[in-house]
Length: 337
Ligand code: 2RA
Image 1 (cartoon, rainbow, N blue to C red):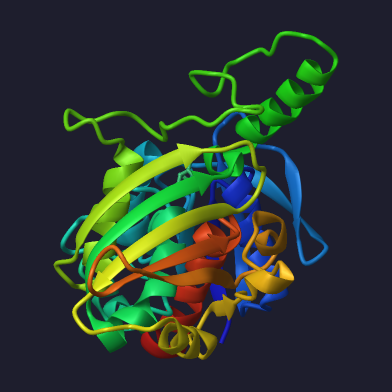
Image 2 (cartoon, rainbow, N blue to C red):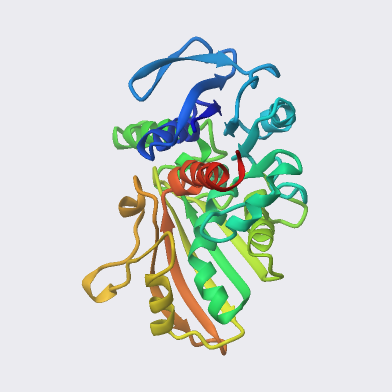
């Protein structure tokens, strides 16, 4: 059977990666439609070498669509997912709009695939935030074995997480600065080239950013566990690949050797942990592939059952597009008829 797919936000960094994932994973696509803003409508993109004209997103764009992959921002998801679901499409939404809705499954296939069964409540499945996805892929095998009771995470997030304008801004700033020009700052509140910004998304009353609270709240929902979590999310001048320093406290003792053994066989994980040989996860190795790289595993002797990890993944692929297409594969393989 083939499935009719709509990609909403097809011209964006994640949308175009979703298209590439559908192609490279040979998803059984019947008809495909690319939906975007009026400004982008009319552009001719491709699917498997055939031309596809980008259409303007409207409430009537979903007739005959089986699965709508959304990555066009929260406002558009809030406005159009219900219309798509009403037309009979199942939405897999990469925005944060629906993630914490109790009637919307929030899914990482390696962690809680069974949650996809709840897709029928609203006809929407939510794709978690990129920084959440890579962390729970790495922590799931450790949690199953030793029960995590607290997580302290600091992230080092690539500019591609903000989209194509941010990628262009970093490129422009670096080149400009090397030529002695002062940088033009438009996407971020400050210069990002050769700098680190401890702000991703806006600040809440608590002093935390929305990005940091996404990691706290989404992790608890995906792992269905009341884990205590605190996060610091930082933007760094890297194009692709989010890195995370993760400290966990577990109920049961978890040695470095045991953690390595568990991670070596964990789905979606690649253990890269041989510091003596200079082998540890780096964005330049994670970019362009779908595994979550885990290394720098060491016991945290400052508490009884503590462990430190360094986790790196491609934020556009596994952090967004690939995760969404993997959800679609389970959906058509197990639930849709
Ligand atoms: C970021 N996680 O990196 C956010 C949204 N993709 O900007």
